[in-house]
Length: 367
Ligand code: UT7
Image 1 (cartoon, rainbow, N blue to C red):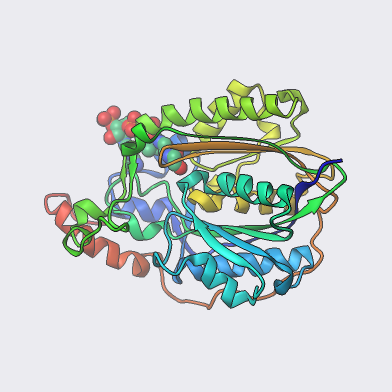
Image 2 (cartoon, helix red, strand yellow):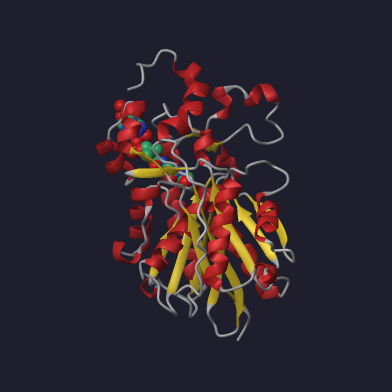
């Protein structure tokens, strides 16, 4: 049997401050009914700490779940498009904090497809023998880039982190096939401009330039088509059909996108895991958080065929077909928590609201 990469640990970090649709009604011209009907989202969580803090906690929980010690890990990869700073990488900071002293570390940015791209990278490294025990984290603090008076973007996104530990298997379980793709020509549909080296100080301070630019309707169409085509290809590569799939764990972009894409694939809702209602779209964090929730809910059994599929900025897309291994119960539990806060969502969003206020000088007042 060839060597494959199997998931042996999982964990997530959900930051404690909630931002409900009712809260958003106070900030913009929207309604709970509109948001639920068009997106399936009722709530999202906001982080009062940095993205690295969330990544660290998710990583510690995944490690405890796997039963491994940090010094057994030989690679830490963090998928994120909202790193705390550009250098050092979030992965290097997590490596240090958890004590993974024998591990290499790097970040990977494929926006919402980051965890799927990351899975393909770490699985290839395990299959080739370049790595043995790998921690892959998806972590995002997206709220920092949101203009909370822009109803076309801010309703969708939340913060969070999820992580998985991958180890080699020789019994046939693990990653079976991969499909990755990109169309940089459509990259203008989702842009966070000001964090790269082109973000000279004056551009960084221009709210028009800084906020997430997002062409929702265009992205919607590309996403439905992209996800269903990519998932169909990954199944074909694994020699499987839609009937063989026990669970699809898709990127939680929008409940309607998930529904349309999986319907095209011929997979009914009962075989699709959706947790977008409470968490919103958390980009690269969404699949590992959903995987964690799916396992906690008993939705994955040993030997199940699971498909991960995502679409995101770049634009990028990708899918993974895998056979779940034997572990569906955690070996151990990490009891740590994020530091407590008594901040409200409005306290946390104050900085955003002030920063973007010049773009809304003619809007009706908040509340
Ligand atoms: O993870 C990365 C992938 N990205 C995504 O998954 C997002 C993909 N896109 C979407 O999820 C959807 O396009 C949105 C949720 C962003 C928008 O939903 P939509 O059904 O595509 O609405 P729309 O943009 O076609 O707008 C329909 C109407 C417009 O009004 P008019 O022009 O018909 O009068 C909008 O101005 O709805 C209006 N609208 C809103 N109304 C109330 C847009 N946003 C809102 C809102 N509340 N929040």
